[in-house]
Amino acid sequence: MFTIAIIAQKGGVGKSVVSIGLSVAATLAGFATVLIDLDPQATAANWKDRRAEENPAVVSAQASRLKSVLDASRKAKIDLAIIDTAGRNDDSALQAARAADLVLIPCRPIMVEIETLPAVKDLLMLAGNPQAFVLLNGIHPTSTKQADDARDMILKAFNLRCCPVHMCQRNAYGEAPTSGQTPQELDPEGKASLELQRLFEFTCEVVKLGKGEHSGQSLSHSGAA
Figure 1 (cartoon, rainbow, N blue to C red):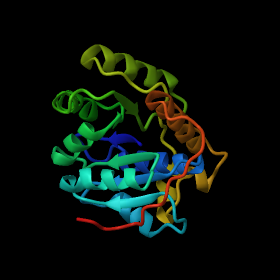
Figure 2: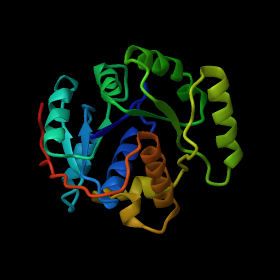
Figure 3: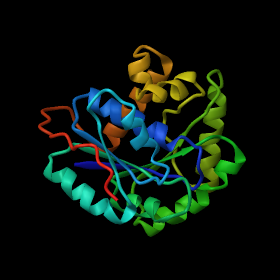
């Protein structure tokens, strides 16, 4: 089982949107997937409550229960666990980073969010320096240069790599969750769907999650504390 943690030191950067989108992308690709919601706001768990589809499984848990949830996921032969964390400096981000094969750090190209990256880098160091990438989010759809400039600046200033793909400002990211869906389901041919698919393909390359037979069993949606 591979584990991806979505962390940031500020709320509102798109962690839950990324977590949910990647979880559905993995499910659509045939991987047995669990989304572990460590955020007290329970955005992912609430999304699951509105969702008609059974998969992906969503488990709401406290950071202290993360190891137990991951152990249960392995026993259920889950292929991929995605961890959504709180949008503040608490124990959930550190615990998730320690458990992760890959960490994604959503960040919009604005100074108030970029300035949180040194704290994230310190957290990654405490977690043993797992492989990590900043995921640029909220890019204007017509501004490729904005993304390229932000990647260069983040690498030079903080020595943090950015994903080669980024997410733009698109209505689908806000509209789809209201019905328990994601952009891939709301508009499979849309640009938001394509962005999430490219992000999923990139994460598969990084963690070497290959295509093949998947015999995972679904975890039931729970509200474990």
